[in-house]
Length: 77
Image (tube, rainbow, N blue to C red):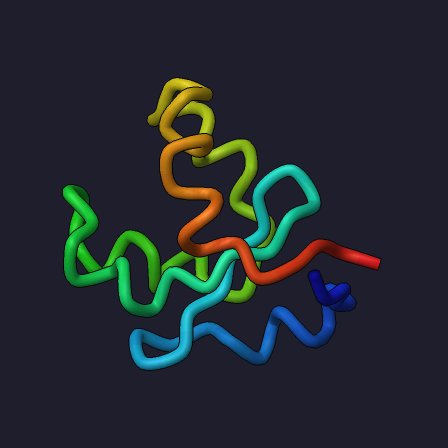
């Protein structure tokens, strides 16, 4: 698994290239954005950012476990 800096992640903040940080792990949610129940805009708004707090306000912890393997691309350095 690769490691990324926060600066690298911030560059991926569009609907066509969307990465987010949750618990110091980096997820490429670009392909998931079309399936996201809250819509593409929700993910794009947090694209390139640490969205840990927002994620856990809206999702139980087991949700992350279900999608982590599919979308996790690395962790923060």
